[in-house]
Image (cartoon, rainbow, N blue to C red; front, side):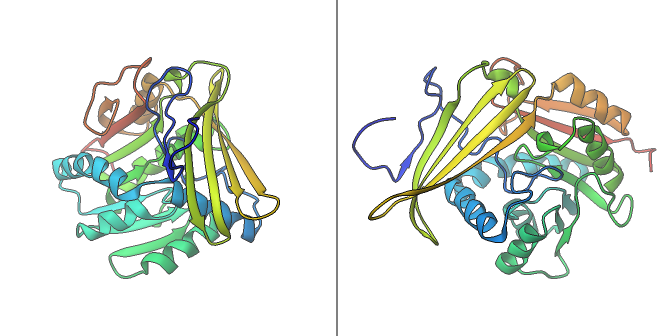
Length: 294
């Protein structure tokens, strides 16, 4: 980490190899079964969720992703979408602002309460408490389903990944589309933590320093998040660690097709870059459901 200067928003990238890090990778505030905030007390949950929000440059992130979703959704004429692990609700709200009918779902009651307080609820924006391995109310109700921000990889059990993909495919109509984004774990070398983000932010509890890192151990990754409260006297600190699964592109495609996908495309980023296992930061899979399948 650099000494001196403004610590208001230091993106340290990949501290070992000099690559720029993905500032939000692997740590979405909402991730279906086995989410990073599972089991937290109300106070700790609020503090960590607030720190997560402060860590992200949301306007920049959504602007980077908007064109991708517009093109994919326009390709199938999508007018409705379910975000199966909506977290803080930012993506769901963006899609609703485009005029789509949106359902944001998350396994956390607290997270859904936050979404309702922040964005409200109406006939075109609905929030529900539901894990991504659970079925939607009406099979084939939506034109599209999304699971982004590495949420799918945070499934509590490995087999939960396939079950969640099956539920997403069930949720969309014949000819609809499913979009999944996860971190490409295979880009990371095994070993020590790669510290990716250090941000100074004003949280409800006072001025704080938020630090995030990621490391790989075999076929699993771990995201480390540390929040230190600054101020006079002794600083206080809270930390959290979230495990996520490494998912191969071929494995994702196989599970998508088994669930009913007719066409599957794989990308390495939101500008439709070619996916390269050893280089791409992201693994994004777009699957269109068989038009003959209900």
